[in-house]
Image (tube, rainbow, N blue to C red; front, side):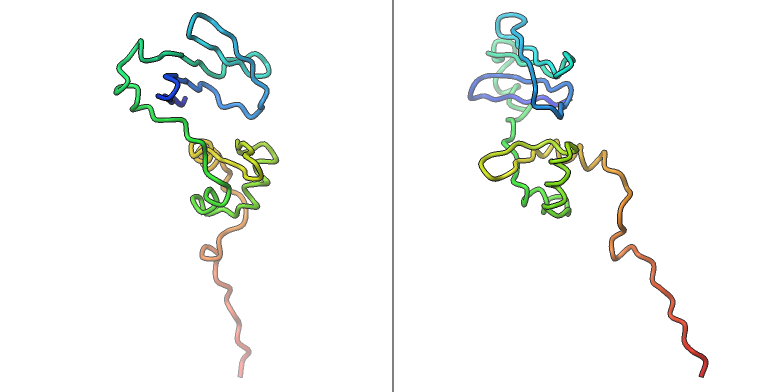
Length: 139
């Protein structure tokens, strides 16, 4: 679960489930309370508008602003994976990202979730490969 607070609009958002699909439905539950549902009707998040009514703005600010994300090249440098590989993961639906113009923007929390859930399979790094023994011919 991730909680963010945007002081510009005074909104507190609880992301209960990260959705891969962009298809989301929002329903007004009560005045100032919006429920976000996924494509199959599952609860994905709750947004409280005018959140400063329920807590001091200073206390709400500790949740942090929603980050716009980092560009794919920045994400690649952050995690040590090539940008082309990250782009393939986005296109395959394994990494959440949004398109801004011609750039992909990846949220830090989504990138860390992807890295945590990533399989350890794949090629070993060159530094991890065992050295080959070379046989010398008898003289």
